Amino acid sequence: MSEARLPVLIQGGMGVGVSGWRLARAVARTGQMGVVSGTALDVTLARRLQLGDPGGDLRRALACFPIPAIAERVLGRYFVPGGIAPGTPYRPVPRLGLRPSPARDELAVVANFAEVFLAKQGHDGPVGVNYLEKIQLATPAAAYGAMLAGVDYVLMGAGIPAEIPALLDAFAAHRPAEISVAVAEAGDARHTTGLDPAALWSAPARPLRRPRLLAIVSSHVLAAYLARSPATRPDGFVLETPVAGGHSAPPRGRLRLDEGGEPVYGPRDEADTGKVAALGLPFWLAGGYATPGGADRARAAGATGIQVGSAFALCRESGLDDDHRRSLLRRARDGALEVRNDPRASPTGFPFKVARVPGTLSEPELHERRPRLCDLGYLRTPYVRTGGSIGYRCPAEPVDTYARKGRPAEEAEGRQCLCNGLTAAIGLGQRRADGYHEPALLTLGQDLDFLDGLPDDHSAADVVDHILRGAPA
Image (cartoon, rainbow, N blue to C red; front, side):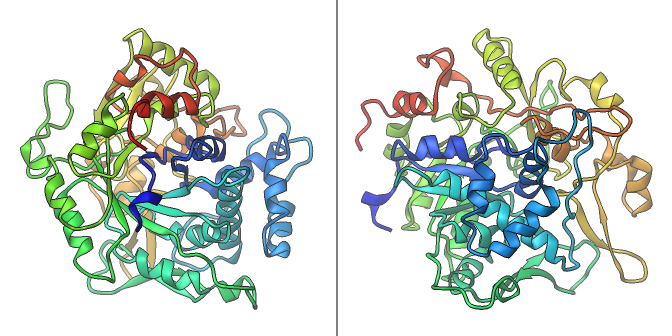
């Protein structure tokens, strides 16, 4: 990659819809990289269409989808003119699974296309999409949809994205592609999920531009592992520290907790930037670099630049529900915001940053009152049942249900339903027939020093200017 074409600042992919197309577009307009979150775009598109698509942006994007019949089917299933009545439950979307589902693939392709399409409008700055390796079942259809919209970068963490370079190569030529799926109790049997573009359309007009892949890692060891072979080598890395928001890698070695019950990180968890630089690929540092001079510190360590999340999560273009955003911002500025790196909250088993805000699932009483269920299922783990069929389980589902699926009940203790909680954080929480509304779960990074010097209600452009003021272009 040409160093002159690389952004200094990457706006991190965040949550379910926190880094939506409006935020990514605002950042890309400054010439830095805007990134949309690719997590659960199928459900966010479906729910926004059921709300009537205020402003018409999604319908405008779908009108440009290159396979009109698919866009029409999605609109027919989910669009409600004027929006559903208040309190009406959202219509469900097909859940992820190993069994093929044309309707699920079509919705995922269209949803990722729409998000990237809207993010790329009105500027020529770079736009990326962020996916989680943990959610393998969603990746093929999602990535193809983003590529149809001309996404410039794919960023991928929460696992080892070793098979993604080949997936992107194949989809650029509209060839079928698949990736492996981790299935518990499967032994040596290999399970896969994939997509054949020919199942969507018969004669694509021309090859797609292959996006660059940035692997999000927390150690130089993993970076070296991925860089060792052309088959697994990404086009660069984002090197995250433990203070970054959302999920973080667990400490290496035996898990130790401090007095507050948070994981203790030590010297073994510090990535060697010199060894990453020696791999010859560009990399960006993330977690604690969102202040003036942060980019300079990163460059001094051999990095191309930095990735920033929380400062953008709190800006006006953020996808967070505005009441939640203002509450986080107010508490952070008052020094009253606690962000805990909870080792139990996430069903993935990775530590997860939970922002403690009244009225959200960070309150133990509210968490205990929430009925445990798993109806979105993005973090479910496939497993082989007795008899050989495939089942799905999640530590955030009812404890007795989880235990019946062959796992210890204590694994479910303290788990939060991230799928529903993060969807509620952007104002799209499910409203159930009995009147119950899903409460939000909020996440943020643990380093909030970036607020010093930012306007009270800052924009994405304010963040870019604040961080890069005086930094060399």
